[in-house]
Length: 136
Length: 372
Image (cartoon, rainbow over all chains, first blue to last red; front, side, top):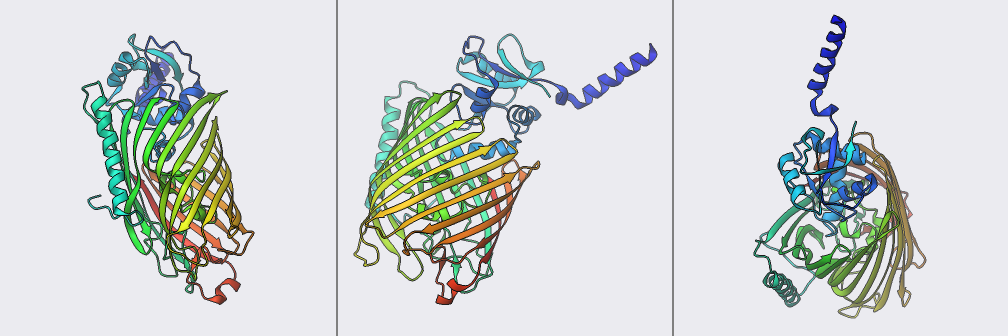
């Protein structure tokens, strides 16, 4: 029994120390949004190739952002910015607005049927609808 | 940019352009029902690059608008650039965008000019209409050509892209986008005119020309990690003053391009044909790039060639480039590039006659690309 508690405690410690690393990232839309979007389509939106929904970003300093793009597109932030820069400077797309934190992302998505965003899984509440979960 | 020197466009035409743009912008603001303030967006890009070659008797350059090139002395102006873009969004439909770009023009380094300056009307995601100063999508990377950070090589291969030095124009562009199957199709049409100053090749003086009746069609299909494009363009090019070696011509480009990028493997390839009527120039050029990403590193190899069916204005040329790109940060990349370039009269200026008989020359470039 003691060893089981020990291993459980050890696991919890590891989980806590890696923090967001172990956590899911939820891609969220407005609860009233009825259109089905698959992973491909969400990737297209976040690489500037589709304007189906208006994407919102977290700031570069957020660890969720780098992880979101790595898990969704298989690319790091430098590559993602490289893809976007080709579109921004030829007028084909505008960069997603950067919102300050997940609270702001939820607020924006909850009030705009055409918006899409991403937050740490633990930040999800009933004001938004999850259409995709990205896990490690 | 506090002062913008417009080298290629007459002052009164620029004034008209600015008036047009401002009027469109103000008009859009006036009819805008929402009382919301204008949303401003600012983005910039730049490259600091030094290029050197092992050839002292010719200068290596990449665009017909460059009258000076690199030799065995390090040339810091050939590939260095600074671009700044400001967009005013009056509503979800109307916006005004200006992008100024400083680079080598003629023999002036970091010479600024307006690369883009247009009013845009986008009532729906499938309808994007712009009027003003724009860039012609002659090749796959034409409209993002100066943005080094978006490319695996220091610059798109000169053997293909040198012919596209007539990329800026005044006119209108319409982009229609459609979802086709799992991918998206974009049909872009451009019409307008331009004034240019070109140095076609070694041994002839620079020529000022009017480019009129430009008609360009650019079709892009993107599906998953693939991009396919096909483009065609026709324009009338006439020197403003008679020159015997450059008669008025009908200039036609047609090209296809493909790109595959899955985040690890990168392949880009293009083939472009150029024909002029009367036939003073006929060429086919192509390149292929293959690269592979290892974390923040991207090594790549680019093989390019240009076949001139006619001896004017250039001779055949080819090059092989090896580039190593390292993403220092999310907005900064360093590149080291070695190119082996065959001597030809288009890319190499002020060459003495013996130059062409020599073997391949080496060109070395170290560059820093950044976004801000």
